[in-house]
Length: 105
Image 1 (cartoon, rainbow, N blue to C red):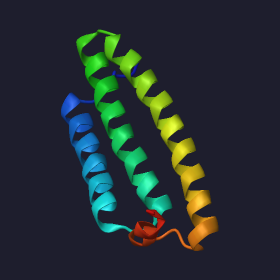
Image 2: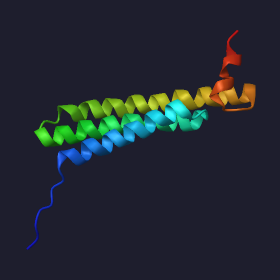
Image 3: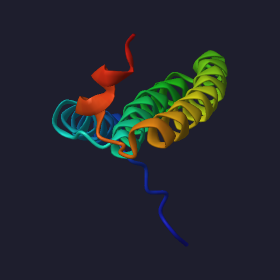
Image 4: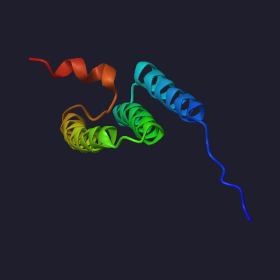
């Protein structure tokens, strides 16, 4: 018949680390607010990938509950972030993060 192919946990750890590093570099380097929000989401999904992979590896589903709450918080963060972005764009006519210091005061 067929053989059951399993993927080692090291693959998921390396993949999640790579995704997190890409997201962290994106947050540090980019100035576009939309790209910044996408990089934050990428970092949250890297953490979710680790939670699910370790939860599956150890046979305990408790970490998957945390993943659910992280997804809920990420959705709320995206909603609030995009609404702030729309208001800032209406005021400044740009989404460059370096120009947001004009909003204080």
